[in-house]
Amino acid sequence: MSSTLIKSILIMVSGTAGAQALTIAFTPLVTRLYSPETIGELGAFVALLNVLLPLAALTLPAAIVLPRRDETAVRLMQLCLRATYALALTVFITLALFHSAIANILNFSSASGYLMLLPVAMLFAGVYQVLQQWLIRQGEFKRIARIAILQSFLVNGSKVGAGLFVPLALTLIVIQTLGQAFFVLLLSRYRPSLKLSEKARLNVGFKLLLRKFRQFPLFQMPQQALNAVSISLPVLLLSALFSPAVAGWYTLSRTIMSAPSVMLGRAVGDVYYPKLAKLQHSGKSLTATIIKGTLALLALGAVPFGIVVVWGPELFSIAFGKQWQTAGEMAQWLALWVWVMFANPPALKAVMVLHVQHWALVINMVTLTMRIGALVLGAEIYDSMLVAIAGYSLVSLLHNLLIISLAIITSRRRP
Image (cartoon, rainbow, N blue to C red; front, side):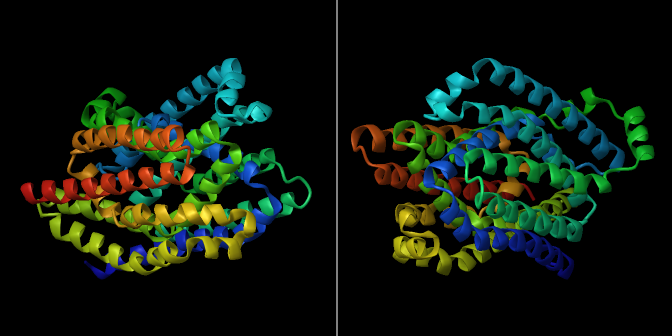
């Protein structure tokens, strides 16, 4: 790997790691101000948002990095934004009619009004995706890193400050939504110039873009949607089958266990993406880059995830309070899965660059069925949330191993 690639990774890591470190630093205060039920309601809101987000812009923001010419990338941005606005409006109308019924299914009957903030949060999150991919294309990793740290500090500080006076789920949801809006406001300063946008509108048609990048809405979008459903299912099903408190324990456990992936794995993926795209354009093999990146991340994650497997309950009880010890028991199982997920960003980006999203979609469909089965089996037959979490984690581990295998095998066949 070139020194430029390593420097870019370190810059992105500094931003994402700094932002996530701030979140973790504030979490012991948040867990002592807000109850598991309250954090469970926030977790369900975020889970629903994550399920809808891949649909918002047809996953085309991920394609903004790929075109050779900037005007093509700008036209893709315009298409993504229109799709995001349309879906946000559709979700708003749907929730206006059925938000009470949806809240009852999730066991959140007292918080049905919270769901009306969902289309607003989805709109801001969708626009953020578009602007971030444009900055990644431009190599503006320093700007992304600085903005991520600032946003994390303001959001987490607001949660603690507001929790001293109004420790409610609505407080957390409003702050979460405003945090995304603030992120969009900062990133919008670096959007493409009006001159370039007008040139893109004249030279590139939406139909041509949809035909050229059809792999994304046809295969990448359902794949990401299925993956989001798989990740969000435990929060929604644990709340519906057990209680919001159980969903709150899982939400904290999942947040803490995903911290290394957010700190490093995602940053590595964002930097690897244009690197892999350039290798593909030049006709060079991606195999060595994928394998080296994956093995390096596996080695890096072995110690922290191994510590959680051994001492999870004790660590969570000390760090977040005794009422969160159950979250530590869940973390012992989640650590096995998240360790491999931490190592798969190079493979995930390679799947898009190699245009094998259709095979990744098949993997997602199969493992989604298995994940649902594991959760239902643990809840309905064993009546145990830990059995449900254990089964879900083992299937998720298998899923990530299959994605990594797909990327390596495909890259070997395509020099």
